[in-house]
Length: 146
Image (cartoon, rainbow, N blue to C red; front, side, top):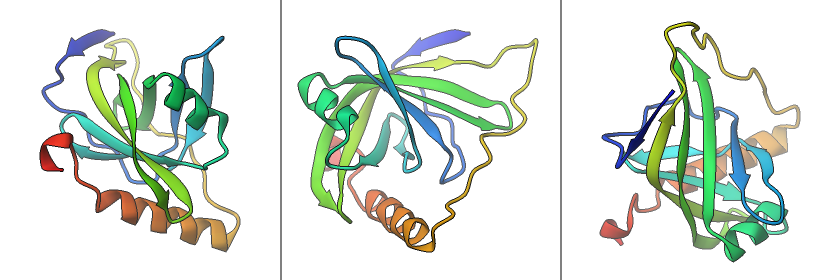
């Protein structure tokens, strides 16, 4: 595993990939997120429900990590700081993760062949998830574009 600071570019991954958000606090806290999208070489947007413990943790300490294992040898953890950029995006809170470093999990001794296979079982939840990701794509990628 290698860690790169000031990443030359975040890897691309398929939209809707389940990722794991890890936040700080008294003890580490990790949750799956379905909305993480790469918005430029050093920025990821994602959304959380307004009552999520992870959101409260990020408001108290913005340092976090997002782990993506999407398959096709795309496996990494992006380390950085999350900032709320929209308090009401389709009923969720939109955040921007400014990436400080990327820990590449690619190893010559194994290959990541596929990401987590999952799907929404509720049509309303699937539509809401798609609407949230569409809203995230419309946000400025970085503070330079605000």
